[in-house]
Image 1 (cartoon, rainbow, N blue to C red):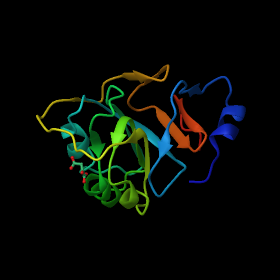
Image 2 (cartoon, helix red, strand yellow):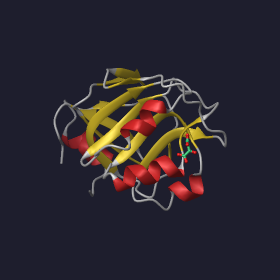
Image 3 (cartoon, rainbow, N blue to C red):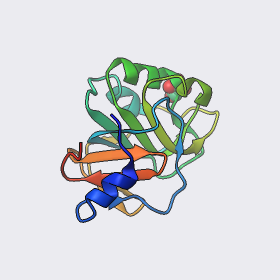
Image 4 (cartoon, protein in one colour):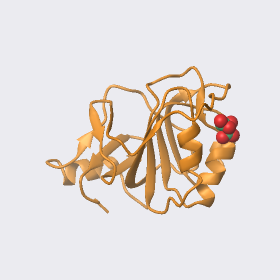
Length: 160
Ligand SMILES: O=C([O-])CC(=O)C(=O)O
């Protein structure tokens, strides 16, 4: 998938929403990625993230509202490797990741607010495919998201 979010914004000015107000970091081996939105809402517990990245993700991006917490990591190299095996395009986490040197070697997008060495707890908490909001944008499951080094945008319809 080759695109630049700036061009997608220019070409679809009336229909895209732009995530603002945060400084995102791209840790995955793919810096530009996009696809159908699948959402998880959780807080310092990556049960739903691990579970869902273990299912088929072709054409999909997992968008996680982790409450902005940088206190533990919702994804690391093992979960991300599994996501690659299952064909996921990428993962966007309003929260943190770890194992960043390994993430950089994987053919998947991983965009988060930052990194931290400690993993999250797993108490089987968190919700799948509900509307989530961060950076001024509500992510509706089934819509489309595109991310690159410039930022993150959403659209009701596929742009590519
Ligand atoms: O296991 C976890 O919770 C996170 C992690 O380190 C990995 O995905 O390798």
